[in-house]
Image 1 (cartoon, rainbow, N blue to C red):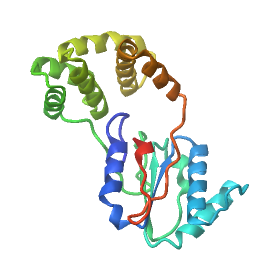
Image 2: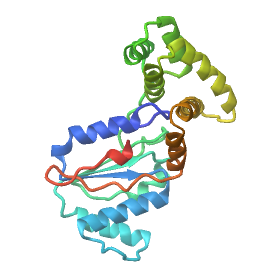
Image 3: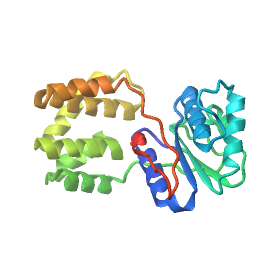
Length: 245
């Protein structure tokens, strides 16, 4: 699945995992944004499968051989590579086995040579407006229209904005003006979705400092932390995807 940031690729992948949990004997979530994170996650997969011993010092090639050896004993498996930069960053890490599946999410659209692709598009205008109104509890349709357009109809941005309005009670019109003021400060971002999400988080963090300064400081500290490792999953064993959310 490919599409711009904030378009819902990760959420769709998570929902697919939950909906398909009984189709696979094992599901493994991989942060594919960096090669070292792919290697670390696959090493943990090998340990969970029993094909890698804890503390083994292995090359990348040895890790892949061990993972493939372990997956050969799994009847049906699914690996999810989330936020992959492009095909070149993950092709060497894909197991070449017939009884499993690999799902990629990426902002890069150039995946057609690796398999079927699905482009995730922003919401349609009317759907975005309806969502803002219902999620926020506001009734100002004109403001919802302006805000949805400013946010590029991105599901993640719409959810964050509507949740803020619902909690603070500021109204969609007030939030839309704040958003435009904050977005101007982030013109250095070439990606419009990054600019929008940065402005949204700026508004939320500033509000957090007013409501609970300690929580705001904790949020900033947590922003420097990497996500917790994913876990192996099966219908009869542990199933853990919350780190991907």
